[in-house]
Image (cartoon, rainbow, N blue to C red; front, side):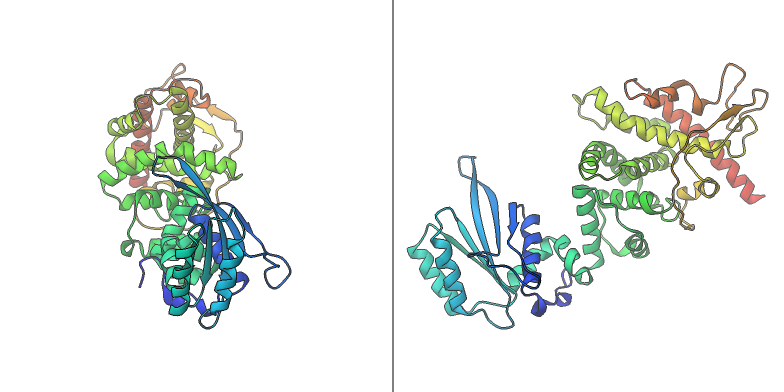
Length: 419
């Protein structure tokens, strides 16, 4: 059995007509084809194709480094038995009469006979201008195993759990698609049986952020400290590329920002503020523009600041206000995201404008020495700069403040549970 795909569950005998053409369309797209044209029409089958079912362009590197464009014609021959030689000969002869066609690809869900293959070799030997490629069922199996997202579109049942994870990783990083709740539940249940990469873990954390509660399946907690550091670095340096893809596809970037802020929280809890701030400051190339760093880092830290503010003021006698970004259930279960037991899912609510009242004569439960001039550190000082991407921030100072608040609130919650 293939690691990503279960070939026996692909109904090759039924993949004919438009089904085979659709499979080829998405397969060629995954393989890097440009200007793909699927010549379909009517209601039940392809329209008159004038010699091809699909047309595509591939760009190849020549020996001298230049890019050479190849025009491909693709013929789909869905059959219940071996493809007849006549159909192959007609397709090749038709394509050879078109001067700008470089490759004719003929594909079947079954097989080609040996005499047909021999004829093709002989024909190519005397007509070298046109390249001829034959893909049979075995070729298709090998190719879709390399590109499991093709099968996920048409025959999802043929994917192994490892294959489903690979599809999630590919769709998330290439198209900014967040995975849905059912597959996240399945992956968590069998997480020990799957081979993970940091990029796939980031994808599922973002999926949890978009669809559920980060406390229900706390993925970063199953990592070693070394892997957690790699996860933190990758999540930060890939923020901008992800935002670009999300913006281009009209998809919200907020779940990704929340996911990265959660990874920062876990790093603070397990590595400490000093190590976490150094990682965040040193994960960039030396010539990376400061303006871009601020554009990436500020929203991440601002979200984490707002979460911790909501949790901290939930039972604070000094600062009185409504939560900024979290609902009551999330606040109550917030620290569950730093331990492995699961909790019930919930839907995130949109942030809103809030009124903040600070009682100057009440102490800070996190242990900060405050007075009428020194206010709640989560709403003052260095954190003011997080709301302006143009201002420089002190990551080390922010990490130190967040760590102190996190540890104080977490410890208080643990004491309440014991009591």
